[in-house]
Structures are given as structure tokens and as C-alpha cells.
Image (cartoon, rainbow, N blue to C red):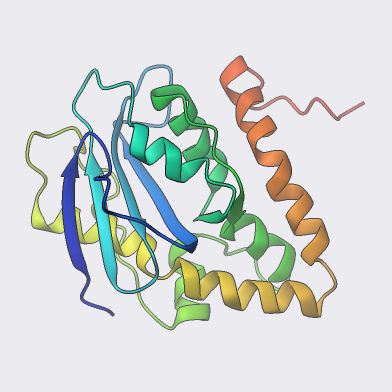
Length: 206
């Protein structure tokens, strides 16, 4: 497993931090309900072993530099289970993420030989690394994050570039790359439906 270089920022991404082509993104919150549970951390990596963690204080509702990056049409944002992260970013900071790539959706479309599509599973198979999820349920709203939390947060974005490349090759091989892109393009609407109350209901059902 890579030993990342971690930079911790507060309430926004500094102006001097830029990414080109694609950036891996993840978020940590107090829970899974965006109407109740606040955004605590956003982590980003350019796939170079460097991770930028932005820790948000309670009550922060704007992050102009992060918003600019997340809405930059020239930079693809790579998530694992993008549906939750983009919903949280929209609710907490008014950010409309585009364009994006979701490795969980890509895995479900490409790795049809398994039902194991968690980040830990795809990293094990496609990046050859074992990911610990021990800190997933820890207190991300704490005033000071532990070294274990910082490492966990960084690990969640360190391998997404590599995983994306492998999944794109598989999707292209199976003739599903176009279908995957259509799914990614729909995700902002799916997140909006979640926020409006259609979290579980399938509006496409009869």
C-alpha cells in the first residue's frame, strides 16, 4: 500500500491546489442522511500519491475554490458510489458536480462475474491492495482528526485513478462504455431525486 503525502486544509481548497484531467474525490459525513448529517471532510487526489483533505467546520455552507474544481467541465471527478457524494456536496455546499465517473457503477457494469462491488473489493482485484474500512464509522466531526482517520480518508482516493483505468478497459472490451457514460450523466438527476424524497422509490417502475 502506498504511503500518501497528506495535506490538511480547512473549510475550502487553497487557491494554489489544482488538478488536470481527472481528480479522485470522496467525502465523510456525520451519517448517511444529508438533511440531518453534516459534511465533515472532502478528500481529493490527482492519483500521484498526494491527498488533499478539506475539513469543514459546522455551519460552513460555501467553498468557492472546491466548487470551481467540482464544476470544472475539463476535469473528470472520480468517485466510488458517486450518488451519495454528489448529493452531499449539493446539499452542504451548493455544488453541482460535473463531469464524473463512478467506479461502483462501472464495476457493476463490467465485473458481472461477482456481486462484490465495494471499494475494498475493487481495490483488491484491480489495484492489488488491501483497504481497511476500520475508521469508516468514526467521528468525522471531531475538532481534531486522528492519524488513523487521516490515513483512512486518504486511502479512499489514492487508488481511484488506477481502478478507473482498469474498469474503462473492461467496459470497452464488453461494449458497455457508452452505457456507463449515460449512467454517469444521469447521476446528478438521481442525486436530486434523492434530496427531494425519492430515495428508494423507483420512478421508472410500472
